[in-house]
Image 1 (tube, rainbow, N blue to C red):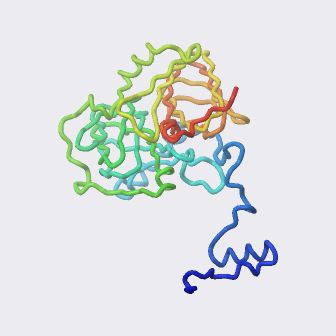
Image 2 (cartoon, rainbow, N blue to C red):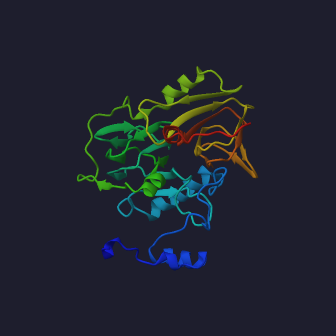
Image 3 (tube, rainbow, N blue to C red):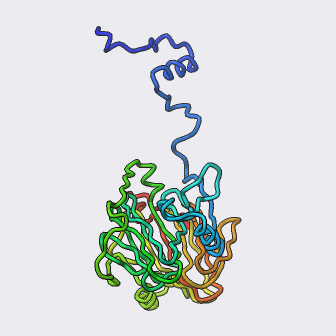
Length: 322
């Protein structure tokens, strides 16, 4: 028999499982019958926890960063809302990261593109503040939701007299895990743009969707939901949630990761032992397999971002029995 067809080790000489395990290590194999950590389990693990971040804190921190960090020194002047669990310094949930960003009056952030999908919800903006997506100058006004699908060049140009603040969402944690991260800076630093395109398909204007959601049938009394699209992203969606003052909404555990942004109003979210009092601009993360309830203290509008399209496409969307 050719040496290439002979086992590297005489496994038949093993007199115990310990000896066999040691032999397997020498050929870079692991046994599947005595794994230290099971690879399959009765229901999803929950490495991330429900979390809440206040816009009042993020805004103050970004205002300070505006004095100390120029856009020439950073790809983006932003704050990452990393889920507060040991060992994590990036993802807000396992598949999506949320970040507060600011571009000062008269400032721009250079154009780049990347394979992860991105979108943003504007918290503070004014006429003459724009996102440039593939050569289109798109307005950024409070409540607007803007898309930048993967590999679209995008930059930000604030020609107004006031600082602009928003929240970015990207599927970078998912793309990092799977591997296909690519990134390029635009050769013109800030991509040249034509006329302003307020009707760009990449923009869901607050003035438009706030009217549409009011006409939607209640999901539960006092709660209306409207998915924004088309266009849509493959990996995460965007749903406007309108809650009347006093409305209550209880949602069961699901395999879907969810993040809420408060566009207007105030209320309370409860999940397990966690209770969050939220106000305009705040962000709330409800990771996979955590139930939660929403109570509106005043009329409220929230944007819910989730990886439901991904879970549904893969056949992994599941909701716990009531």
